[in-house]
Image (cartoon, rainbow, N blue to C red; front, side):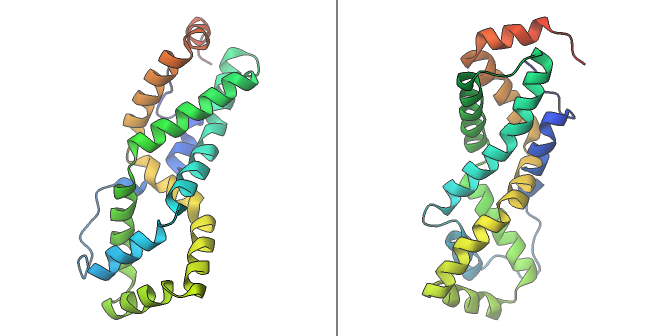
Length: 180
């Protein structure tokens, strides 16, 4: 199987990866508060939830593309395994540290040093913790989209290799079908 960079199945990956473009120097540079805030944003299992939701969203167009090329629906087992491959490759391709570094870059562009100190203090309160949980769920799709774009080529290469290794019969079936 080969996923092509501009194929419809990767639109969601582009939606799910632009965040990882190298961080540009923010106006005020990195700060301890910005790093702490980024760490808070991805704390207590929120990062895993974020990645799982993003990978789940990214799997849909991949499955649709596979089914279109095969001319049949994937079995439940094939669908589950494609989802597992997608999640694993996504996690291996885009580490948490990259998400956090990008977040530091973003927040230092929009908040002053004083505002960052106030945000960190707020997010340590019960209401702040609740706000963090809501914010992480509500922004997952956008962030995953940004994160995927910068590593699209690496992701495609790794996904194709894992797919061929773990689903050889399905991969063989795809190789026999002409591209549309």
